[in-house]
Length: 440
Ligand code: 4AD
Ligand code: MG
Image (cartoon, rainbow, N blue to C red):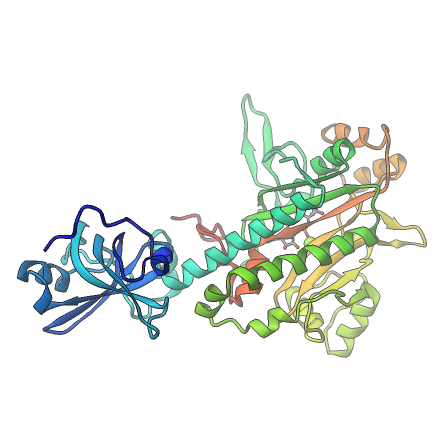
């Protein structure tokens, strides 16, 4: 009764195109329900999950025994006929005719993640296996969609991808969150906090650029929004103002949300995400100033005083009033990075903007207009106590054809946590790095 050699090898996602045909699906046993006469192996292959139906009376006795005794996450190649089944999650089932066990998980040392509840630390310790579960799989597919949408948007709007270095000699976002690495011959370098400074150089060469890679922050923050290693996309534009930066941020966010709604509905359903909240994400986003934000927060009972930076709780309070991201601009110069262009009409505030996601997800984008004046930049580098020699190349950009320019950084994990409706960013990246976690 073994299947003819001609059965095509397909993926679960392709099953719909093979209804009525005999196929072969290589995968892993996700779960198994069984009775004396029938077994239902759930087969996953990374593209989806399909239920097999193995009927004892129709199979050789030995084969039925093998199926009945399969262990979770054993690797198997299942052969059978695809049948449309309206009640099945993917719309199809597989009537099993044959099954080869590639590698059987031993009974004595079973797969550690079972359908029962596990604690978060246990799951994080088994992250290399946890990625196989339905929920984690859905989250990482949304992440891929977000990344693809970001690239498609920027590639389609005239931005050139110019990646920036990870070993850097200087701080971009303050000296307190640098990871130091020993380089050769006693030289010290740091892991990049942001590609922005290099983006400013490449923007003067290409006009519109972006970099997209891992960035590092040695922040001792144990919050649901902080990783020590995270991925950031950073577009940068020559001849651009704060207004241009805000417009790009709004368009990019709308495009990304639209793509996820278009292509990842099934994953959002697995995550039980309320998609009506995402469907509301449309331009224009509300725009408020830092001054107004402080007033709103004080009215809501926050202790914030003008001049202070917002904490996570403040960001949540601010986003409460809106069903879409809110853009807050013109923060006090003193709380922002050295490179921020001061507002010419009010030098105590900077032409920077943060985009705060709704539903309490906090800052997803930070950016603004950069200082293009040579003397002002020199002054700021000194005020911030930064080593001038490490910035000589950056200073050159203000000598040779300086123009108003700007851009932003969008944290991929924060965006994915928001779109998926997750408690914590740790599930939005395959192998998270946090204050107390560098494994697996
Ligand atoms: O606001 P940040 O620090 O801005 C910059 O790094 C600028 N140099 C970017 C630029 O203008 N090119 O970081 C930008 C974004 C934040 O809005 C947030 O989404 C994310 O990066 N981010 C983090 N995500 C996870 N864990 C952390 N520790 C993060 N720190 C920042
Ligand atoms: Mg920021």
